[in-house]
Structure formats: C-alpha cells, structure tokens
Figure 1 (cartoon, rainbow, N blue to C red):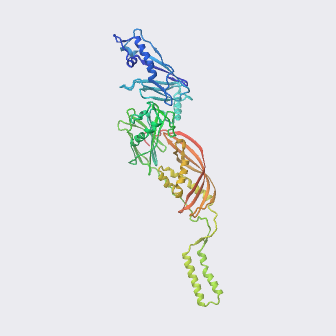
Figure 2 (figure 1 turned 180 degrees about the vertical axis):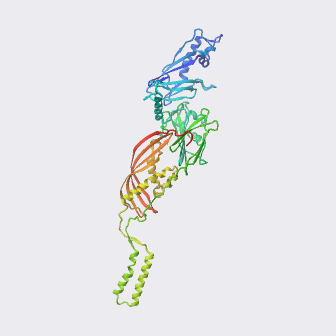
Figure 3 (figure 1 turned 90 degrees about the vertical axis):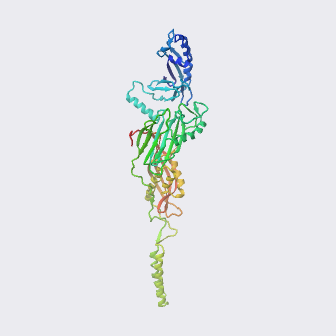
Length: 577
C-alpha cells in the first residue's frame, strides 16, 4: 500500500485457494476449478475485499474505496487443479481518496468472519509516498493497526542513512510525546516522596477482553455509553494490579479515567467529550496513593493480563532516575519490587522567629521613676517645717516602703500613649519576606490536603489558612494539564519594597510590603515533563503571633507566565535505581 496526501493505492494479493475457501467454489469431476468458476469467485471477492478490508480516518469513520477493485490474474484456460491453488495468485487493486492529508489511518481486516476458529492473517506493508515504509507486519483479523502520518516530513526513503532514520524516529517520538504505538498497553509508575502514582493507557479493544462495553453501534462508543462504563473501568484498576507501599496495601484515588481518540498525545490535557472509535480509541487511567510518611519501599503486582496481552512494559520514575521493566504473566515475572535509597530528610518548616524587642509603640522605664519617690518625700518634708519629727520619719519610711513594693509589682516599662514607632525597617521586612516565600511553597511538596494545611500553619495565621491555601494552589495549577498541581522546583524573590507599618488587632507588631517573585515548577505525566516558570506580584501583611512572624493577609495582584517547555524522559537504568 502507498499512501499519499490525496489518495491511497492498495494492492491485495491472494492465493487462488482463498477463493475456493471463502466462496465455496465447486470443482469438476477431475478436481479442477474451471476458469469460469475462478472468474465467478474473483467477482465475488471484489465485493468481499471492499467490505472486509477497511481503512478508517482519525475519528474512526470508514473510508470506502472509490469503486470495486480491479482484478489481475493469469488463469489457465483449462482451470487449476485443487492441489495447485497455492501456486497461483490474484491481485485486487483498490483506490481511496482523501479530502485532506490524513494525520492518522487505521487499518483492519475481517476476512475470517466472527465465527472462524482461527483468525485470518495478512501481511500489511504501508509506505508513505515520497518516503520510506511506515509499517510492515501481520494484520490479524479483528486487531486493527493505527498509523500516524507526518506530511511535514515523511519517513526517510529506503536509501537513507542510519543517522537520518534515527533523527526521523526521534522527531516522531517528540511529536507524539513518546506514545508511538496505538495498540500497546502503556504503564508508568511514579515514585515520589509523598505520592505513588500509576498511569495506565490501554486500547479499548484490549479492555473489552475484561470488561463488557455495551454499545448501540459496534464500531463506536458514545459519550453516554462511556459514562455508563466508566465506574466499571475504575473499579477494574482500583481492585487490580495490587500495590504495597512501605509494606502496607492501600486503595488508590482515581484522578482520571478518560477516553481518547488517536489525535491525542498528551493524556493529561482535558479531553473533549465525544464518541470514540473502538478500533483506535484508548482509555487513560491515573491512580494516586498520597502518603503521610516519605516513601521507602514499593511492590506492584500486575494481574490484568488478557488473551492478547501477555506482557507489559512498565517505566518507573524516581526523581531523575528512570527504569524500564517488563512484567509478564509467565515465569513469575509479573511483580516489581523496589527499596528506595534514603537520602537526607528535608527539614520541616520552622517558621520565622520575631525579634523580642520588636514593637509598634515607644515604652518608658517605670521602675527607675519609682526610686525618685523617696526624694520627692524628702523635699516635701523640708518644705513642711511645721511637721513633727515623728511625722517626718513616718512619711519618709512609708514612701520608701511603697516605692520598693511598687518597683517589685509593676512592669519594668509602660507604653507611651498615642506614640508610634517607625515600624519594621526596610531591610528587615525584605529579609522576612524572602524567608517566608520558600516556606509557603514548601508546604505543597505534600500531596494530602491536611498535611499541606499543617505545613502552612507554621507561617500562616489560622484564620486565613483556607484563603491563602486556595490562592497559592490556584497559582500552581496548570490548566493546560487538566488543572494538575505543579511540583515546585525553585522560588526566587525578585523584589520587596514599600514596607509600611500595619494595624493588626491583638499583635504587638505588623507590617505590609509589596513583593514580586518567580516560581518554577513542573507537571509530569505519561513519560514527559511540562516545565513552567511564572512570576507573581502581591501585597503581603505579616504580624508577630506567638513569638513568630506569620502571614495574616495576601493579595496576589499579578500572575504572568515567563516560560514553558516540554521534555521527554529518557531511560537512565534498565536494572534498577
């Protein structure tokens, strides 16, 4: 088969024995198939090939040939004996036309029919015009093959060098984000500090070997039918492929269970709800195990094999390390176990201690003033010459005693009414904000909401925890990735200025400042990484609470994307981390 941007030319070559078997041709008394009988079989096979060999577009719609195929054969005038039918061939030439260059084509054949004991098999060779071969392999009845066609740069021709072929393959891998097969089961296992995530991509036809997919039209699964079967699919994977974390089995959360056509490459993106073709559609499932304690060990057992899936290639990611393993149903090779090396634990947030001398008002020393009371009493006595000696002694003694008692019982200083201090110096406020920002985002390394709240509470006032949590979370979401929360890699303060005192009831000191900062993060799914750097600006209000600086107000005024890119993961190890 040769596929061009406007047409596809298909040549189906068969043995004459196929005509005899498929159409029950009648031999004569000498076990010969006459020329007329073979011509009758060829005419029947023209319609047979047109209907049983099928090409579908990217949406799964069948593309019929322009007309019945032309037949080419050399049949002897006397016919062909049954014993020599495998020595003679016949070809059927079909022509297909496209309204626009097809980005995907799905090929299928149903020559053996639904009641056959053994499925029919044909050799399929597909070549893109002005390029090299796209596919050369067996096409089994009921097992479609989907191919991607790149019209911007077709496959290199047969005379291309190995370097040119490798370069083309690399470009194809990048264009499809590493998902190059439309009939394979993909498995990705992510091992992170506070989360284990298993992502599975499986063709609908493979899934149907396990789960009934009732539908009105055999070739398509409608949106309503997808919604009906989704709970069964989720249950199938939640209860299957059991996974132990730190020696304990757990039930995962289902983050996604979506249906995709062949045009999708990034399966973390929101997908349009539409009918999908059974021949080429896939289901993407993301299972998540959020952890309270750091990950130490993991064991996964794959038990979701089928008659067409005897082995699954799973890619395991841990930090920057990547390992590829094969899980098979034979030879006790269906489990993956790994004990992770324990690095230096990341310290928990400690908060920002406040300077005990920090305060918004001026204070006067009280105890030194009390020592002047005896002196005042002495001056008074000297002016009262009419007092007796006894009265004078009692007055001075009482004054001294009262001054000593007051000095012991009263505070050392008292605030001056209606006085204000100059507030937090610019340099000190900038330093406090620069310490605060990384601690805020560090809380989001946890994956359980309660753990994030607990970490934020170290530097955020309890009354505003939910509001600040939601503001920061909104800034970390990548909408292009289905709202997935980015993992923070770096927080860099850009500028901090306009530090002013603030009135916060119940606190000894507070201030506000304008900040601008950059946040670098990434979202990783399906073997590729989306990197993003955003810049934020906002107004912070901080106050001294329980001896430490805490955020009591946050107003994010600006959020702009500085850069975005996508990279593919590469395998760094084949034998473990």
